[in-house]
Length: 269
Image 1 (cartoon, rainbow, N blue to C red):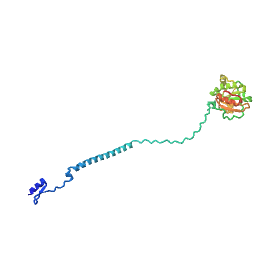
Image 2: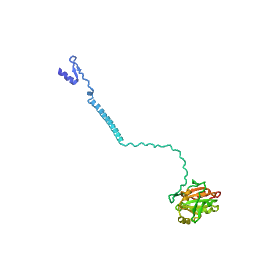
Image 3: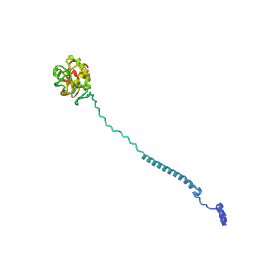
Image 4: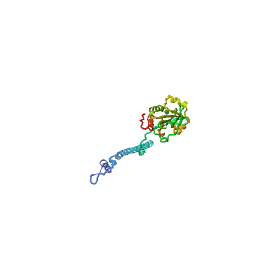
């Protein structure tokens, strides 16, 4: 009987009831989730592990990329930040004064200089004062005495053959001397620190028509404040120095000086 009950349970899952003559189905234990779906927990956990591994890989990769970028950035020298140059507020510009002619100096014997043109009137201390005395030997053997020309307008120049500007003035002075001779104009030239043997050939070459004197030691030039050459003085009929200029001069400057001692005369260049 026991053997029969065991067979029934194995085959049908029902145990025969001896009392009622029926078969009692043996209660089977409820299968667990693992028994219902064999391998279910393993199917469910494997994809999760894969996803977790992928996510972790991405995080690690991103962290590595960030670290690499930081390392590269730290190795690259930083470009200097441009700074705006400091500028100051510009001040109002003053008008530039009109330049005047600058004398072109030539050396005199003994260290003095001969100079180029300046504008007339010039700031010579003799201007406006009585002319100092002047007596000098002339090339023609006569004596030049400024006092003998009192009552006449006089144009006096201290000059020298070693001064290019001085030589260039002679033709212009010749022209003025001839043109205004009828007004009583007297033109005199005094060569400073030169002798007759040096001066005479130049004067003859340039056909100088007015008296030329010599100041061999330079004392006369010193008295007349002629430290540079050529120096021009215009002296009126009363013996007053009316104008002075540091040459060499052009015709315009010469005419301006002459106008100060020839009032009422129209002076052409």
